[in-house]
Length: 67
Image 1 (cartoon, helix red, strand yellow):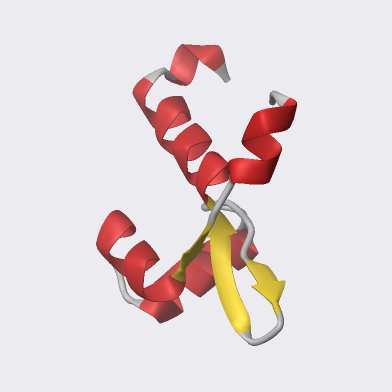
Image 2 (cartoon, rainbow, N blue to C red):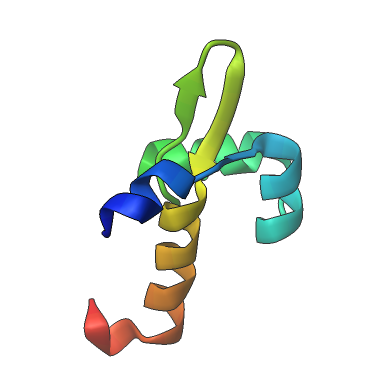
């Protein structure tokens, strides 16, 4: 990851993650804990996933041979 990307990586919060993955918050949490989804990050009271990790997750789904 380039240095510039590290500083531009945003935290995607749970309501948006529900829409992205098509499941409820509880399922997002459960799948993140089991390792099926990228890990959740806790910043103060805010919980979410890094955008770069979500993008990487979908790239791996599209190109499983690259895992």
